[in-house]
Length: 66
Image (cartoon, rainbow, N blue to C red; front, side, top):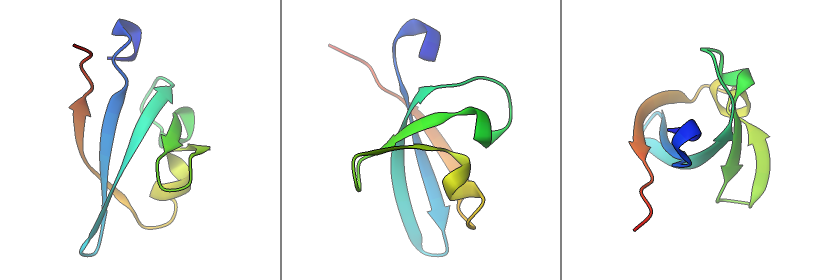
């Protein structure tokens, strides 16, 4: 999706909470390899900032421009 200029939207889950982030770059299987934009605070982070704190990857959605 990244190479097609359609940033993946990742749904994260922790307990009964969910959170969505937008992946801006990365590759491979490690969450630390992926940069994200977090709409909660507008900050650029690593996906591992969440996965290292008990959040799990729930699903991936594709952003499609119209």
